[in-house]
Length: 373
Image (cartoon, rainbow, N blue to C red):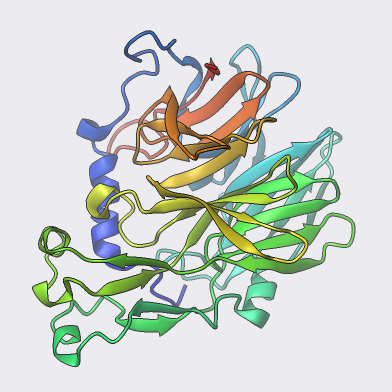
């Protein structure tokens, strides 16, 4: 992609490597403390299991995103490959009935120089495949966040001159698309586009894609301790940086609103605190409201019938439940590098150890445990 989506991209990358190092790697899922039951491991040895969706038959679909692979975990733990194409980034997955839906993309991120491409792929019970919903074309034509300002506002020129060259001082949203999380509701697929900073709807029948809403910038005012920790000039202390919102997942709630997990852009680890959020969006008019703030690195979201929101906290403590009434955060499934979450009945499913350790065999896992009232 052309734009510099991450403030201090090098710092964010370093944080990612640190979190995925052996010292930060997740212990086996059975290592839960206290009276809380230990998660049950359904599968392990997965490469970057960043997305999952559970099924009524007890199986779980897992997107091994770095491998371009969709894997099915049967009730007995056996694994089978449903779809594989290493040329594509295979991201969010969902299913309705016996049809599977996947978000795929190319050209997203600084490591992929290919032109932007992205769509929804469906696979029916007979294995017939179809692609529809040209998400990259939608973003290229409309640039959803093109009217949004990011970066510092009114930073003195003398201070701006002291910033590293890879820090964008101020800029408008640029053309980018990375369809990441999806939710299928009726004949509509809602897509969290982490590149466009928007939520998109795709009509299953016609294949037409349109922007539902654009997420707002995420402002952060720097402290002296944060500037020092990130090796940035002290003159930025007290100044506010408007980070890009990065929608990672979407779920239609029982109240008809869309609930969206949003990373804050820039360092996603605790370097600048818990800056992630969950927003709610009215799909009929695009109205955006903040549901919960101060959430650590939310990368997956789901809901139960009571309206409680469940978030996979990638650099946090595991799966968090956000109360529908108070927004209070409670850990319901402990884990490290928890990338996605799915709720079925009274059971929570999650992927943990989701980022690979360099020079080690993949150890991503799918786990489950009963919800505690």
